[in-house]
Every structure is written in structure tokens, then in C-alpha cells.
Length: 280
Image 1 (cartoon, one colour):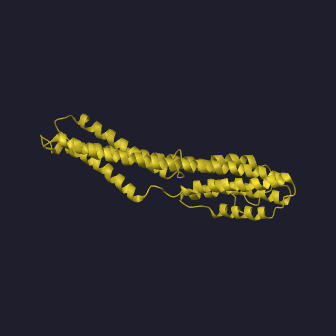
Image 2 (image 1 turned 45 degrees about the vertical axis):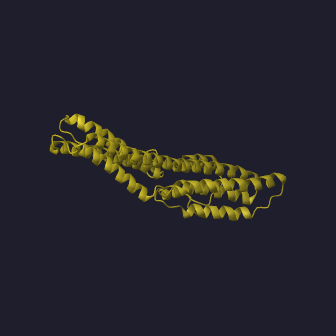
Image 3 (image 1 turned 120 degrees about the vertical axis):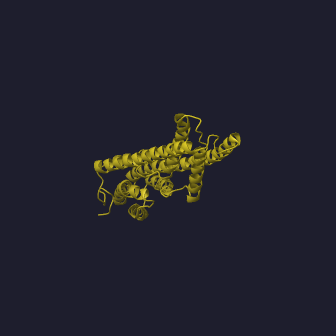
């Protein structure tokens, strides 16, 4: 487990480093192009009416900002939904484990093992699968096994009948939690929206470059476009981060809640699986 955590941390560092590299490259390229344009622009500039040109840039910037804000809000909602789904699922598995304590006998023992294997498979198999935009057949297999084992139960007391009913409620929450987190495994921001965002970012930076003015010093010309390019690029990177919540970014959603649950329920019951949740 320590090795897998170290790999995740290394992967998160690499993606974060890559994002920082992209940010530096874009800002540097924007500044270089702006200064190159400044050297070749006529003394009076390329625009006859600079006020009208500035107004056009304001319109483009406002439209892009509004679209970007809605995209970040939409991606943030999906990110939070994935995080909440994972937490709901982990809590439900803990409650199911407690319910299985009441359902005594051979069937209750089998349910304990199924829950342990389910949790192991979620942590070690489904989470890496979600980073690839997929789900785990191993986890689904344990879901089917739990259903089959539960069908063999025959409650014999009022206490067991109450636990029997509670099992259905907790299973529904577990199912909803898993569906919520699995639904965010695939990118939620559609490609046409990415294209529009790319066009908007390119238009803003290009327009700022053609507004170069050789009458101003290079620092005065470089600082505004550096700030704007850094802000635009950072915002697009934030959208990419939120749209891929299970990738190896630093700060991506990890199965920490399920690990806590696994630590609580893996209390010595026999489990028909190995440490990764694979059936044995």
C-alpha cells in the first residue's frame, strides 16, 4: 500500500510539474510575441482608433470570462459530486458491516467477507480504472456476490428483521454513492466547449499582441500580457483538473474515505479475496 501511495504522489507531482511547465511556456511565448510585435509595429500603431480597438478587446474578454466562469462552476459541481459520492459510499459500507453483525450465522459471515473484498477492490482496482475513464468488473462482481449471499438470509428475530430492512436502505446509498463517483470518471466538459474556450483564449492573447505600441517601454508592454496569459492559462488548467478528478493531479480525489472504512471493517473476518480485492 505504501508503494502505491508513493506512486500516486509521484504521478501527482509529475502532472503538477507539467501544468506549471505549460503555464511558463504560454506566458513566455505571449511575452515574446508581444515584444516582437512591438519592434515591427508602425510608430502610430496598427489601429487608427485605439479606443475602438480597446472596446473590442473588452467585449471579447467579457464573453470569454463569462463562458469560463460557467465552465469552472459546472466542472466544480461535478468534482464535488464525485467527492460526495465516494464519501457516501464509504459510510454506507461501514453501516452495512454493522448490519451484518446483527445478521448472525454463516450468511452474515459471508457478507462481512464480501464487504471487505468490495472495499479492497474499490481502493486498488476501481480507482485506477476511473482514472482511465472506466469502471471495475471486480467491484461489480462483489456487488453481485453480496446480492446472492443476502438472498440466502432468513431472519429469525425482530432484531434481525429490522437489520434486514436496514440493509436495503444502506445498499441503496452505497449504490447511489458509487454511481455518483463513477459518473465523473469520464470527462464532463464536452469537446466543443473546449474548442470555444481555446478560441477565446487565443483571440484575447492575439488581440493584445496586435495592440503593441513601440512608444511604450518593453516592460510596460510585457507585464499586462504576462498577467493575462497567466490568468487565462491557469483558469483552463483548473478546468482540466476539475474535469478529471481521478487523474494523478496533486489534490485529485483519492479513496481516503474507503481506506478508513476498510481499516474499520477489516477486523479479522475471513475474506475470499487477496489484498487487492481479487477473488481467490
